[in-house]
Image 1 (tube, rainbow, N blue to C red):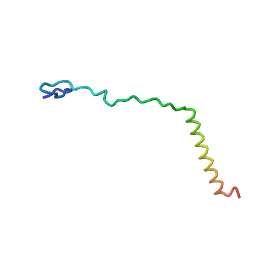
Image 2 (cartoon, rainbow, N blue to C red):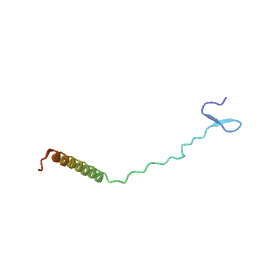
Image 3 (cartoon, rainbow, N blue to C red):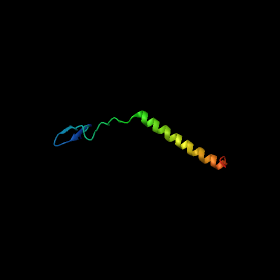
Image 4 (tube, one colour):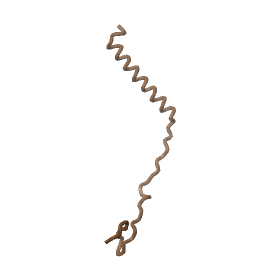
Length: 64
């Protein structure tokens, strides 16, 4: 019987090798300008609100 935490790597049981270095890549820090992202999101939200207001005002006949 192989002891817990060991791996059969030949005739005698040995401790299994750790594979912590395989495929690990540190995530890169984003180089985005946070202020620019916030401004873009606010402008997009304002454009959406303006479009909804135009649709509602047209449906209510405010302009004609």
